[in-house]
Image 1 (spheres, protein in one colour):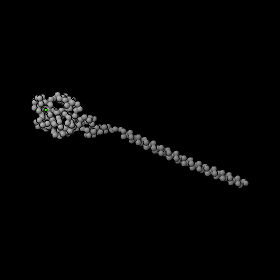
Image 2: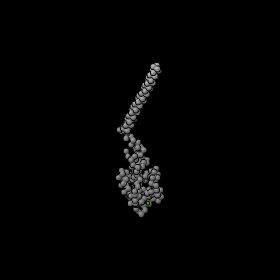
Image 3: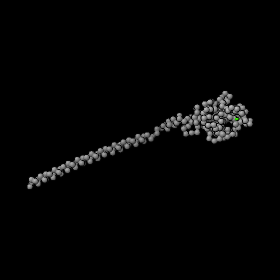
Image 4: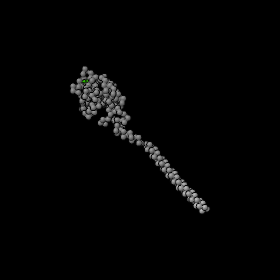
Length: 208
Ligand SMILES: [Ca+2]
Ligand SMILES: [Ca+2]
């Protein structure tokens, strides 16, 4: 009977020892888990701080960078990246008005915009403006107001030795009162009275 009791006691002791061992291994696992979590969290925090550091560096615009961007834009849009009113052709900028006015007012408006009424001195230029004006009437910088029949370009270009594109039968000085030239049907030129109101083309050098 005593021996049996002793055996029972030993068994209980063994069971306890087993549970203690099991508990110990659980604690170890939890500790390892906690450690790995801590490590992951630390790595995450470190990488997050690095990303934000790179991000803030990217957002810093070094001095001169903005100028580079705008000079690239000027290459793409020589007449000014901020303006859609001026169109580039052959080293110059052209403005095609959206309102109609007399020749003298048109001339003044071009001058206000630091430009002049267009001087069409080549077939290439004629083709460009013809395409752009779409059969509509536009003043150009040509007049014989000073002396009838003596046509003069506003910039002093010699009329007699330069390209012309008059419509057949023009200039006809109809009614003895036609001293200003405009693009007419099909882009061909016509002389008309200077107070006639039509669109106008201004021209200027590419801004520097
Ligand atoms: Ca005339
Ligand atoms: Ca005419």
